[in-house]
Image (tube, one colour):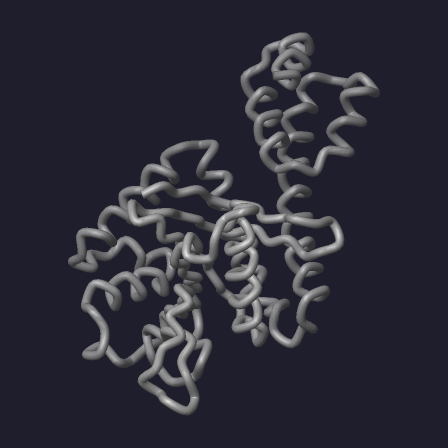
Length: 263
């Protein structure tokens, strides 16, 4: 299984690109996109459709034949019930209206997982325990869910929290998720452009918080060169800002700081 995170798909500057939270491929060449959805989004079905189309464009190379297009799954883990039917799992595939048993078999499947399901007997026990873990608050997430997969997730989270650098990213993400939950920005926004603005605002908040942390550390070096200050002010890439923050914490002089920020 090959897994990548925050995989970007942008094919034309005039068309909307997408950034996939988790993108994976198994040994059968089946592709999976997994997204976490914490706020209600009425456009989720059309988002799913667009994600499938963008994934297909990446998978089918020029000159290839259609049978080479692999199966693909778009999976949303929702912290609410996206369909209002109290199900833990909603699976959607194309089928014929005239003959309900006739499937299109186009290889695409969309799945919504809900933390608010009540049909325990209709789904696997492992899925129920996983979704209950996702729904749990910070204190409840450390409980014993009696499931090996959940234990592995808890161990991974524990290791992240023990890492100073990763803990800051974890806490930043938690702050942003809380903000999204409290303000409910996605609910009621127009499709497309408004969604992009909301995502941009979240990213801008994250960049602003990182710059604030960096500026606090840099105060210990006194007055910074104008060129260095301008670079920090204009930079918007979170990865670069995080590397600069690390370099600033490790540097013992202005020369070491400048050299570390060049790497």
